[in-house]
Amino acid sequence: MKFFIETFGCQMNEHDSEKMAHLLRVNGHTQTDQIKESDIIIVNTCSVRQKAEQKFFSLMGRLKKIKDARGVIIGVTGCIAQQEKEVLKDRLPYIDFILGTSTIHKIKDAIEYGEKGSFFCDVTENGCSPSLFIKPWCIENRIKAYVTIMKGCNNFCSYCIVPYVRGREISRPSKDIIEEVKSLAQEGVKEITLLGQNVNSYNKGTDDISFPALLRALNKIDGIERIRFVTSHPKDLSDELIDCFGELNKLCEHIHLPFQSGSDKILKLMNRGYTISEYVEKVERLKKVCSKIAITADCIVGFPGEEEEDFKETLNLITHIEFDGIFSFAYSKRKYTKAALFLEEVSRDVALERLKYLQSVQKQITLKKNKAMEGRILEVLVEGKSKGSKDDLTGRTRHNRIVNFKGGDDMIGRLVDVKIIKGYANSLRGEWI
Image (tube, rainbow, N blue to C red; front, side, top):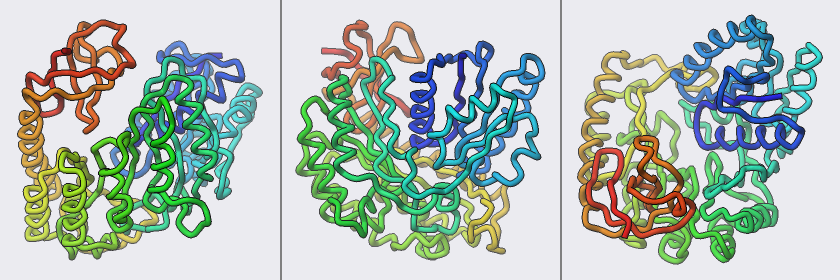
């Protein structure tokens, strides 16, 4: 049978989709990127933001028509499945299975139930789940790979649904991770991205090695050329981890360090656990250890209680640090979170106006930084054909900037030197030398 997976959300969800695809392929199913050809449709969901949830329910309306027309098996996995487990089947009676964030390892069982016309549901939160240990080996010609090192979060930021849908922090044993990365290197993978809701807390409270020690061990593995990780929580960013950016040659000069707001008042309401002065101090230390490091972040505007002065403090932080890029969003109320009970709501119009202005400020900063790359020769890992032009290749620098340039297919998977000839708002144009 042919299966199609639609994925919403972050790298964690993308990797979960890879894991499910692996389990289905080794059991004789074939993956397709054409939903019209599929016999099985899996929707891997995200509920971190309201927009992703709205997109999910809009898609499910369209999938019902496919179900009615040709009787495909439809399943829902991920955060919405976990969050709405008690009502999802009532709202979407035509779905065949529901799997939570810790039970994707049961995808084969869920499909078998669907083939028999029976409904399958398992949203058990079982701590150190077998889902954490799935290794998707069946991805051909892979250049980059995700490696889950932990799941869950203990921070309970007041706006965030993650602890409620991903559970408490659980770390994989370092030995298991190292073995997986060695196997990926033998397959030809050159770049790995370590995944966790808060990688800085890896193995916290255990006798196993720390996150910086794990990075040092992975840095020694032959064949792996680049190491990245997401996501870092500022309150847990240690000096030892910062020092790794000056010590480890394979650790890319890029860190994603969400600040969420530039106002100490709002950070306290968000339960973030740090002040802006502490955040700035850590950024300055990162730049001292690694002068060329690229720093990206997440930011929420329109959080309950955010006044104009708080927003100005966020803008001041952005212009002071000059982030290489920011993923910015207007606050959306999430069920079960503490912030959902806050009364001092910012009007949607005001939040969207602030968001638009913040994004315009950041766009100019990113453009300036990208134009500063012009004339430089940068190492690029060639990932494949460019989406914008069939005549171009595309890849990323160690700073995680996208570069498009002309070159032959034999360059895909290689590290090449590219001279940057033009910097744009979202990418760079280069010339292979």
